[in-house]
Length: 162
Image (cartoon, rainbow, N blue to C red):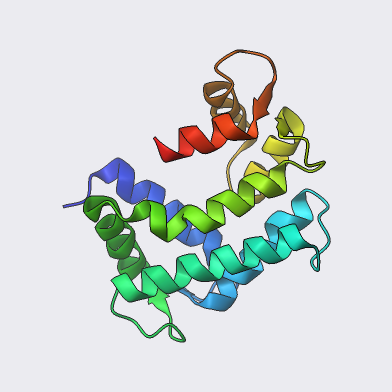
């Protein structure tokens, strides 16, 4: 059984990924999501960073579809999505499912490629991902362990891996 708090988080993720609002997730929903995130930080759709995010998001969808025993060209219902994410978490494969999309998201947030993510870029990306300004601020504060008002890309990656 999936704990209520985790189920609620997965339901929120489902809603943000369901870009066309039809109640199902497809590979197209995930690539549309990548475009929303790239647009949030002003990254051109044809840039290497935006393309890496699209590839990472497609990978995440394909891995979830495999876990849900759904054809990769098919669609996932909310319940299939939740069960697939839960399976990935319980089996210890969540990193391989979401790793490429997370790495690409982090790279996208580092808008100037200097290895540092500003609070503003972090917040813009998180708001585009469906989180409130308060949630984005709390996440940034939790990751900014040194209280410097900026995140080192390596520290964010390490925190996501924990």
